[in-house]
Length: 283
Image 1 (cartoon, rainbow, N blue to C red):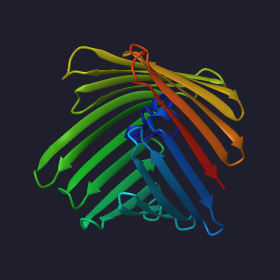
Image 2: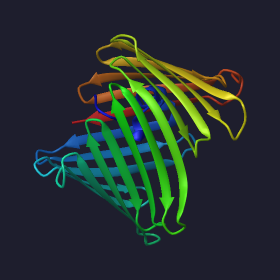
Image 3: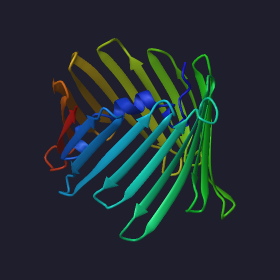
Image 4: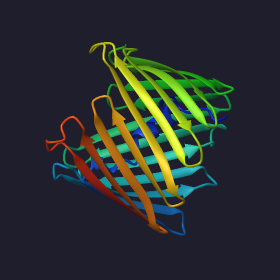
């Protein structure tokens, strides 16, 4: 079993509840292409329901012999990011990642260093923001026969103070997984469950309780149904009566269409509903 990162202990349930729901943007387009010299390009554009548009262009170079990945991104906010990843060069299982950011309009600069160390029963990460603070965030997960336990903590060097901490436990099996997380200084608790019922059906649920804001427990359930080898449908609903549905289909090799909508079932007469579409082109 591969040990997940701390943020991915609830990944199966979170992906089912959050991914491939296309109503979040009015329209999304993504174009991906690969060149023979190991350079991949990706262009994305989004239109929000508030009529705002945004986009980004990304170029990624991969050298598998060196374990090197170089990624450069430029977006419509005129932010430039350069990420350099180097895996297994210093030690087996160790990946180093440096991220340089620059905003020409304000001359604002950023530099982050991330380290990941992964072994058969351990997955640890450290994130350093060297120009702000500096600050450090570390997390670690240990696992044995499907059982997982992890913790994370943040530290501000300038203030010499812990800025936050979280903990999680979970269990992962081939067909199902479950996890309990405690975040925001152990004040927000979440329990999630994911089940791959069969090759066509997936189901999951997540309950959340914030000990600071009150006694109400938030609940969200979702399901995914694969209609055929090239299409699937998803649906979810939460305790507030907000429901969402989506449909994803491979129109032809390299062209994928996604459609989605959300409805407030308690306010059907009001204009609170959202619809969205997504096109992805790959070559």
